[in-house]
Length: 590
Image 1 (cartoon, rainbow, N blue to C red):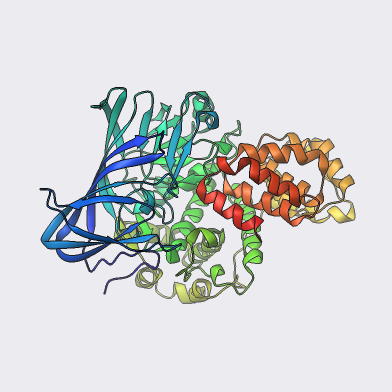
Image 2: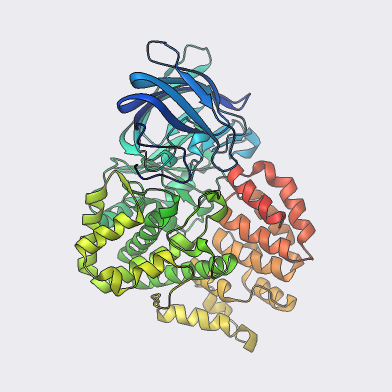
């Protein structure tokens, strides 16, 4: 029996889908995609083949020559969706599935023109992580089942399709007023990295290997913000070795995109909240770039091994920042991450199994236990490995690790076996099994310090004793400085203290989303009414869960603002991505 993914019906002993050819029609009126998926198997198969689906309408299953294949769609499981079992005739190597998506497909968000920057055209985008690809394609929806694909997508002729694949070509469709875009993905990917967007999308080249895509109204801002992408790409190759995906293009998404970024190879998705105007939030781009190696090349076998993706990527992101901007930049980023980790650990509770690095998520929706734990606890463990081995030796290990496992999906145990082979005794030296298999944060967690970090932390921690930042000095603070200072302050402050901060530093008028969100959490927790209008408008402007969840949590926890939280959600729920909307519904039902 091969390794099984607890969040998928996939059984690779039955057979493996290695390539998929899609031909899909996008209908904005019905909010459905329909067409065919041709699944190609690694070897001929006889008998059952189980696929993952969620709310797909299966219309026909046949061989390439048209002979019908028996199939059965199982009942819907709230986490897993529905198993599609095919009964394949002897020696079957290709299957044609005719199907349609549901208007409620969990991976898709259909935007009305009013929800876009241009206000003239509709927009559609996908978000398949962690187990939402099954709502778009009938697939072995597990990271274990990597595949290549070709895709044709037919859309209204005023719109453009972009896809995480080799850049496509457009041709007139058979239906008047429509055109078809064609793509090929030659490198194998796990299903959660299947990604596309449809809208009024334009682009600009930023470097020989990088292009930014956005709506026209956003293009100039995005091109300025990410102009230094080539430096990041070069710095990343110094850490990992050659970039194997040919291009590193990225798409700045509509405001409702629920994450900071999504590392879809060849076309990373980025939140527009990164467009601060001063390049102060480009570390998210460094994170998604690092995923090109840790996550996209070497992938976790299942969501239970998610830390292999995120812990190594956060470590790499901060190595890139250190290479570009110095050690203090790394220390400040690590401190911000540690604050987020401490909050996540407190929210789960010290004994929660979801504070382990190796989780057991069977029966649980991955979206329900998604947190900073695999990111930041994972980063700390990888940093311990580096400290124990020495930077030079660990740098060599990382390159060997990537090269050895590239284009495969691995378990935590496979990683540990390779670590012991290449760096004997390192895992035991840092007590890695305690980090991986036990809850909470071990006592040997590394710390990252700098004089500036200590100054900011001490200033915030002395607030109750009357310490205050000097307005003249604070005028020169960076976005990271403000994040650290605000995160270290008590969540609930006296109203006079809130008023002083706001009058001196105009925090309610902040244009940097990281600074603003941290301030608004304090304002919500404290019941600071002058910020209430900005809270309402901010929650109407953004769809990023990093901002939505803590701010709604703060509002709902305060009796003074509890009703306001419910009202704001009612006004804006339709604008949030289904993944974000579901998470907020759980907060407001607690």
